[in-house]
Length: 146
Image (cartoon, rainbow, N blue to C red; front, top):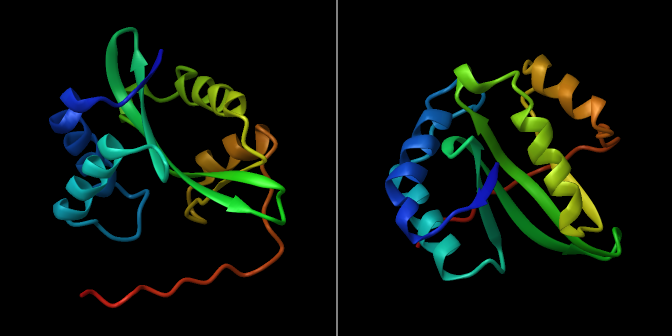
């Protein structure tokens, strides 16, 4: 089952995102105040981001965080799968594939995601679902904090 985050999910969201950022799937942890700000933005509006819980029955065992952009190149809305996390004991049960099937129903012109190069299991899943690597370098610059 997949369900959208709601106002009662604060502690669940913060707990699952902490587990994700404490895992080997990321390069560096994210401060709790960033995760709290994201939760507040998710409640405020879905204009920029959406969050879904991946559930084993009624029990949330992971989450997926989406970000939205608009791309002239793609011809419409692009959904970025910013984060997807399943607790280790819930992996291999088809919940990830179920979420990707759901993602395909959201009507985006393009779907994008990132993976750590050494996360072979995730990369194999993404490739099996039709994702391919982009042939160009992606760059980033952090904005100075005010």
